[in-house]
Image (cartoon, rainbow, N blue to C red; front, side, top):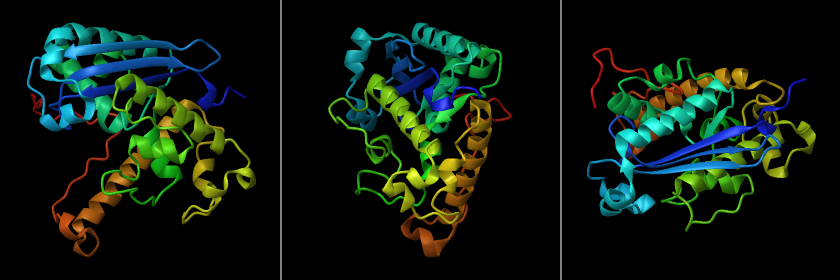
Length: 282
């Protein structure tokens, strides 16, 4: 039997950006960390001058001001070229990409930046589709559904919540730095994998207490003894199902309350949202 996916060499990827919308946001910092697999950790980081003013909310999160980036950041085209090349090498080597909300945000952000600065899509530059992606948000939502918000400011599946759920220490002063978040996502993936590959009756008590319509063991077991390609295919389905469920929630006035939107459309594409037919310049 091949090596379980969670103990293989993984490439943890994370970006900090100028905005929340991956189609229009610009990368301001990046980290790609090769970790695990019995080999030394290899960390690459970039600080990027996006050439545009950031949203104030983004600066409040990552702390990188426009002035700092103008002084210390690489020109965007140069940095995006280096990042895309590094990711291409990882993909070509078969090393799985891992990150938190990687298919919901980061890969789509990089895809847009590749089109903007390099004239091609991320998969075009990689010369192959992305088929070995591990998104810890998708995995966590599938394995431990129905989690409640921790507080008004801390959501049920944000990076900190997932990390703490799986027993990881969280250092808020280091959080929202690309290298810290990337490494934490790799650690969460490992912790999820350990539980999935543990005999169901020996899993932690909190797992056995999960509200789960399929029984207390089934969802983690969906991640056990499958290769990365199969796990990737399953995440495609889970992400689509999660998006459909959230769309139904938003369209239901009895459930969504103030968030009600009868025409809400949530795109469940994962790990990349298809480009608009007209090219959709951003």
